[in-house]
Image (tube, rainbow, N blue to C red; front, side, top):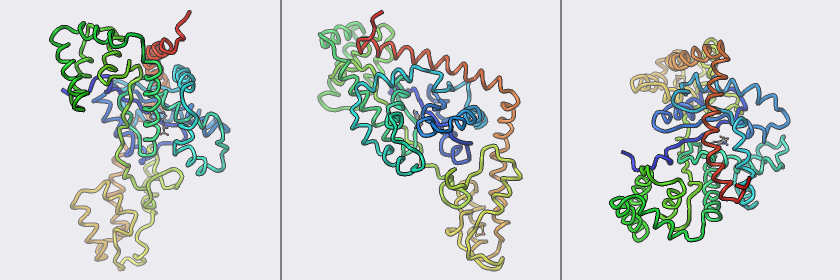
Length: 405
Ligand code: TRP
Ligand code: SF4
């Protein structure tokens, strides 16, 4: 059994609906989600508010892409039976938590997030000197903290946002997790676990606090997690008491770094919409074939008889994704000796991409033909997400002194 407490096993991730998904998304993100959904409680959502922070002048783009994106997820194998799928703006608790967190988040923390300046530079044609754009990473923090997520699968560029989330959670717990008589209450809570567990908790806490034993911390958390008889408040106290501070109301999440997508585009650069080098998940087979047949190769191979060098050819990285060792050997030999032609060389890649996309296209078609099914997957996901979100928001409001009625 894993020693990570169950609350750390909730996984949350979002994707902005700003365009059709392509093979880069599939290899970089979706395959990972499909794997995670079987090991963790997963919540995946369409980050439509986040899309609005950059696309507020063209809101139609978002509406067009929301449902197509959900269909792409389902087609890629994200399963509504295993994961909760929903739309951010249909769980308004995210917005309320964002507002409440904004009260305690120093401006400097947001101004210092690297994506803030980077994106403003990169997207010069958009006016991103807005309040909403500055708050982008804090909204993301709310997305994560509202579910007390333990793991957040993200790419390298988003790690700073998870780091901000951790800082905000820490500040929140520091400000609102304190209570008069915390230590006495924590000690009393320990005793409620029964003699054996209480002894174990005290020993583990000591190992962690005196020797910095992280494993003891993990085991102690797992112990707390398995306790049926203690209240939520006591559990939070005891989580906090392990580290000595106060109650842990919002646990700090970890970034689950997605291995950088190796998915190369049609020109050898990383596959990305902004490079115009993509193959969409639902691209017609004839179009896929055409794109691959016409993609550039090593310019040294002007004539069929000119030898080439795979390292200088954008087709080679595709072989590295799709081909077995024998095929790769065949490419290396054949290219350097001019024993094979480029079209011949592309053959196995074309076949592999078509084979990969075929079931995706078929599954997508089923959902395109049954829009009601997609709507109800999302309706169910929104409802399930709201149940969790409401609970957290209640705790947060109580902690912030907003629980009067
Ligand atoms: N900002 C993320 C991106 O651009 C999308 C996102 C929004 C997200 N909220 C999130 C990712 C919460 C993980 C968790 O990719
Ligand atoms: Fe590229 Fe293959 Fe042609 Fe060599 S033979 S240049 S690897 S497409």
